[in-house]
Image (tube, rainbow, N blue to C red; front, top):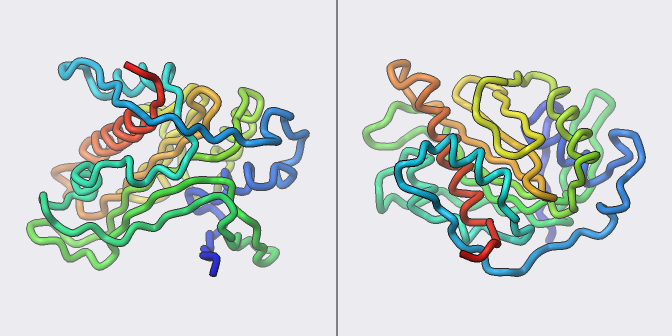
Amino acid sequence: MPRRRTLRRGAAVATATVALAGCSVLGGEQDSSTDAPRPRTEAPTSTSGGADQDPAARLTELARAADLARVDFCELLEVDEVRRTLGLRRGTPLPALQRTVPGDPVAIETSAGTTSQPVAEYGCRWELRDGVVPGRAPGARAAAVTVFAPVVSPRRGVVLTRAVRAREDCEELADLPRVGVQAVTTTCGDGQLRSEGRVGDTWIACEVERQDLTAEEGPQALESQLVAWCLHALEQLDTRAG
């Protein structure tokens, strides 16, 4: 039975999902390059640069050059990296994976009612909501990566970045690192950061939520978590050899 998800208006993924699943929702003419998605099948290879390179600089460099796979990729993300992003100790069982593939139905809630349409994305999400983690303060936490199946041209990237900036209840953080050439980093609440943008002809989004971080750890710790998580996703999905 197909999985069904519900996204509220203003939720982090809703606007871009609608924009790609049904481009007419945003208006304008759909690019011919997005008519037939081209999922890649090459085995991604790690492209990690020097160990001493600043992670944010490495993220910017990789986002300009990477050629990302548009496939069901959850198993490519390393378990220990998911644990680290969630603030879990090594060996701690992960929460259940929430996997999304193109065609999964999603319900979009708006002031006019609820509509349902298939998503056009591959997604992997892990989240903890009970807040019970030994040695950490209580609070929700999540790690997620989404890759859209259709090709995203520069023109479509402009439409998507505008849609992201138009989200309700979210704020753009222009000074923070971003993933992609046409990219936006936003927060939709305390302890949550999301960066998304166009890398080559692929739209990717990575998200981190850490409600457990203390005031002493502060927003810089959350920013570092986002950069490391986005960098890991790009490295794992980059199909370039060598």
